[in-house]
Length: 404
Picture 1 (tube, rainbow, N blue to C red):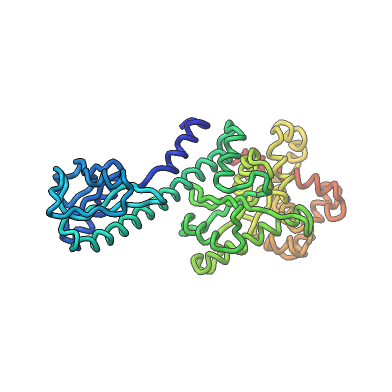
Picture 2 (picture 1 turned 180 degrees about the vertical axis):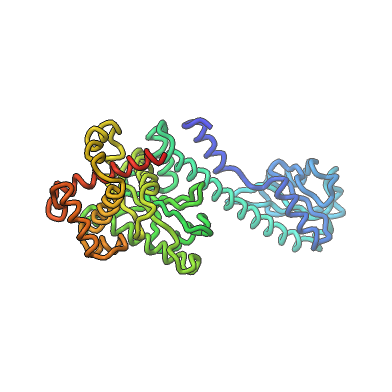
């Protein structure tokens, strides 16, 4: 389907389409026939019989139904003594109404005095069925639009900005609202659609949040953020962590007492055209941080590693390979794990040791070895921290290259 004109035509057709069709009408009469012995006909908006207990009449023109539709009458009774025209039998015909317009006719054959109440009951049932089908069609239409929007946001670099923003607006999303992508990788056994439905029941899930069950079984939420309390980054993390807590609580006993998911949060955006970049950040976090503890892994706490991963590999080799070549493999592994834990705990020794699963004194001994090797102490030297942050990221990339 082409963007623009074709898509607009499609949307208009969907909005004005009626779910009354022969398949639906036949299925309805098949079920009804198990309980009623009356001959029942259902006609479309052109007066053609689309379903009947008498199969020979399907596809024939019903003049009385056509006349009722043209005149807008509320009922047409055809008495036995009326000498009806060909194709019309005595009975009662009633219009099928949907959202203020007549879309068809239901007819019940027989003495009008005997079948009128049955005809009204069938009319009400058909109208309820049509309304339900319209609701289902609308839900599917919204789902189709939602899937199209997610394709635009995550994968289609060539999608015109105007088309993306128009589609978002049609779905009720303001384009400039600050949102950050949060990927919830669910524990095995949890269904993404069920989990998303549970998330949406929480007060923490806002109407402005853009959420989606991904094809690979995760839940992606572009979470709406508010700022002005503790500071931009602090508010970003607090808002996402609050949502993650609520999401975890919403799953309740389904996770069997275990953490129901790992969550990865990318940079927030106020421009739909940049959502794809934040989505790539989330995928990068998931790939790099599978061993991390904590409910949410935040992108802004991984900037050094991310920038290092984006730098041209030859530049990183020129900067760090000569240093790395002087280190033993065991020391390099120990350095990478220790620096990551220290960075995540803001160089709080007790917390970093807990993350590593070692005693605080063991970590202190490692830091002393690092100081002996490099000649600086990252505990009180900010530039040393910068060096170790990027250098440890390089060591991880180097290890991946060798393993691959």
